[in-house]
Length: 284
Image (tube, rainbow, N blue to C red):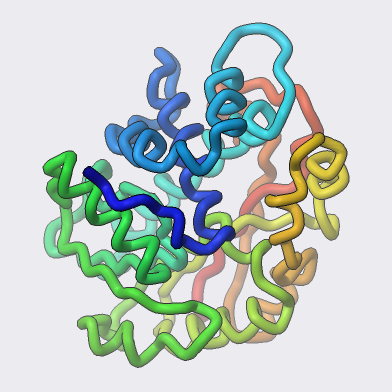
């Protein structure tokens, strides 16, 4: 019996909804990825989201759909595939370490084909990782790399904890901040990425979501959906549209990728406003 995740902070509980959407994508015959643990995570925590659970299931049904699940389903599928491809390409290009910032219920350590001797660090709040470990143990999951869990609060000072866990700052690293920065203020995001920069030698890589517009139309759209306040009230905006400029000023060169072009590449149709996308930055 998995411990109830009731004590998880509200911002961390959103990972349960994302796991549900990853489980739906994994069921599709044309799936963009396969996550064999997503359903177990969602089922273990779905009591927190009795209303959202129905919305997640409805998102997979043919025909018009509405609600948070329908809105985020294609976004989560495209984001997950993009991040998968980014991490595998970065490690193939010589990054010897991977750091997942706010790893949540991400299962990449268990489902991707990593290079030999890769070290993967998962950083998140203790309660999130405790819940995650219980589900993974129940599923008898086996990591496909050297996986190291580091319980930290990313708003606080966390670099020493990461180094103490075995992270080697002199080695090139692939960093991923998937779905994280929007929950941080500008100053919080800046402090986080300053630490990442300090721990990254030349050739290290970093990726996260980015929109050239301040919110890419998403905030207004989501706020129009009844019952969305528990989610949107958590959003602080991160670096907003200034991410490429911030990174350039701190020693990174960036390339951006639009969500619409990725959808076309992946053979998906986006029925709503999905402006914005992602960036990959390389440390100079």
